[in-house]
Amino acid sequence: MKKKIYLGLSLILSFSMLTACGNKIAKEKSTDKIEVVTSFNAIYDIASKIGGDRIAIKNIVPKGTEAHDFEPKPKDMVDLNKADVFVYNGLGMEEWVDSTLKSINNDKLVVVEATKNTNLIKNKDSKEGEGHGEFDPHVWLSLQDSNIMARNIMEAFIKVDGENKEYYQGRYKEFSEGNAILLKEYEEKFSKIENKGFVTSHAAFAYLCRDFKLQQSSVAGIFNDGEPTSQKLSDMVNFCKENNVKTIFMESDGSEKVAQTIAKEINGNVEKINTLESEGSYLETMRENLEKIYNSLK
Image (cartoon, rainbow, N blue to C red; front, side, top):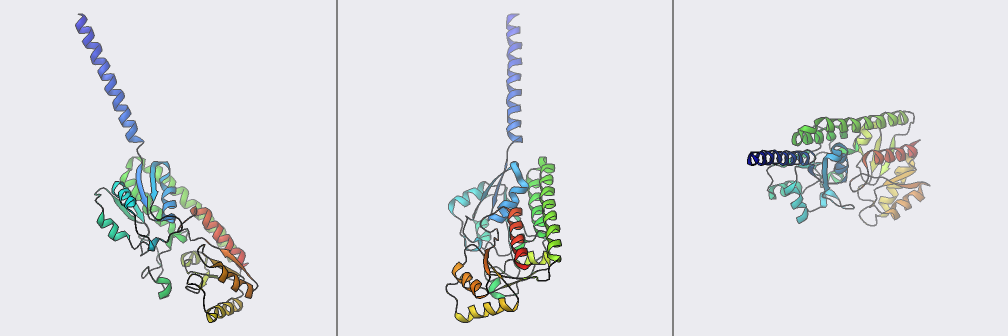
């Protein structure tokens, strides 16, 4: 009789342990995060906004490095071999992607070209298009097209982690609504001013300009190719005077000395503008950029 009691207790205990163990495994599985790798900062930040705390995310291109000049390191290859999702911009922005993907061995990897199905702008200037391709790759600088990029990312996360579909959809809705609010605010602001043109060191803002019916002008290389010729400087100064330009926008790695020289000649000022390629949070940086451009035009 005692043996039967002991056997019964043993079975109950074993079942309880298995149940507890099973619950623990289920709990661990339900809290597993998607392993995500992104190419550069703008893509990283958008993916982070959509993935929230359901993803573990790593970025490949380090701060201060241009995405199209970068070569992945061995640790990046290790990360890609373990990842569930890899998100990149495309359109020639990351020239290293194709060869990198061919050299890894990860059958489960979901690859997302974030700019798929976006409304592309053709490169007009061969200098501005150099290193990229037929289309301008800076799509993320459009508040409208970045929604499409975010949706592409959301769909990839849902494909890998369907159980959390509503979570990713909610995060996407929050992202797109934030974009819509900012878009409407600056559509109203820019509609009230006559001057629509601004000068940049690099023509990266075509998509932003399309959103707000603005016009960017740039002199390719004048800030970043060492000391420009006196003719280049003279042409730039004349252009600014003829178009009542008072602000020279430049990227963070440009030559401030040259920009200050031009600003002095036109009695203007220099402003740094952020393409989000190497740093910055998306919506906050877009607001900062738009406010700087607006203040320079009003």
